[in-house]
Image 1 (cartoon, helix red, strand yellow):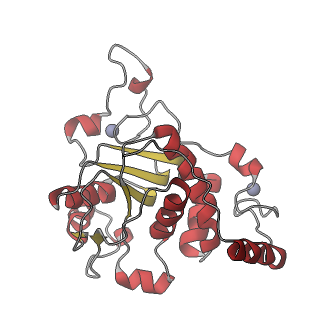
Image 2 (image 1 turned 90 degrees about the vertical axis):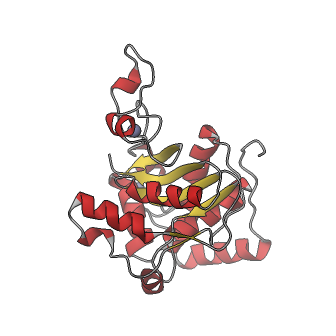
Image 3 (image 1 turned 90 degrees about the horizontal axis):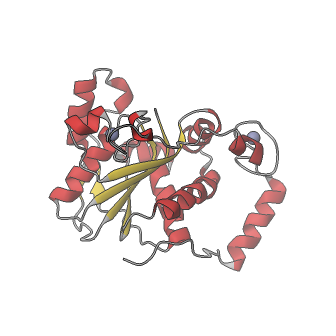
Length: 248
Ligand SMILES: [Zn+2]
Ligand SMILES: [Zn+2]
């Protein structure tokens, strides 16, 4: 484990030239306000809904108790009742406004070019947080959905994050067989949880060190919890989690 910091992460000159040429033909446009210049413009970032404290130090749920009171930094009611399999989770934004527009663009509009912008914001958050992690593992998509979309958004974010921080990425640590039903069809919370637990399997080779799980959005935390449990059972070290956004 070395000290976490942002590395230059320079892309090869050819790729930089290609980026510049593409920017001329398809100038980046803010996914939230349509202004030209960047995928998420400064204005929208400033108005952004940062997932800032006071929050539960484990699951990062907003928590008034965490602000102070008799016991400093207490964990939320849910984490006190059932402790998640991950040590701690953090998110850059609340899933709203420009952050939601960015996730939608990446996930549903095929705008994979926004991934470096999103990962850059995640990298800044990660360096500030500095969890002791040895490798990055993206939450996998089921094969069918991956084929539909052409990529796994979490994998793109994980790869960019790896480039920016020099922490290696392991895309095969977790697998997701096709059989599991997508979350949105299961309204019942208990059923969702059961479904999520069965959705992931450990890959053939599981990292031995501490893991940083990466996903685009944290909803109930059930996905991250299930992934962390699978990794731990397969012999990985403690698991931390980072998402671009979270639903409060
Ligand atoms: Zn904007
Ligand atoms: Zn909590």
